[in-house]
Length: 60
Image (cartoon, rainbow, N blue to C red):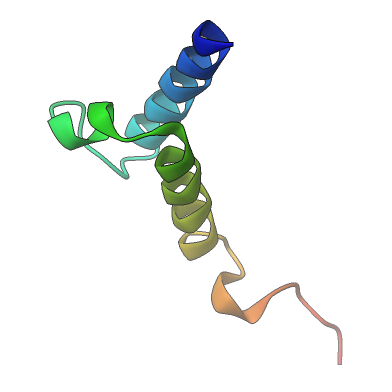
């Protein structure tokens, strides 16, 4: 289980670096627990979603 969590952590770290949410040199990123990485990833994705805070497009 520990190995699986570590793989998930590394995958989220790579995604956050790829999205330019963090820099590769940012040591803080590598010490965050999995739960915090998930939170940061969701937060970043919501902030940078094409619809922003408005939700889905609605036709009027």
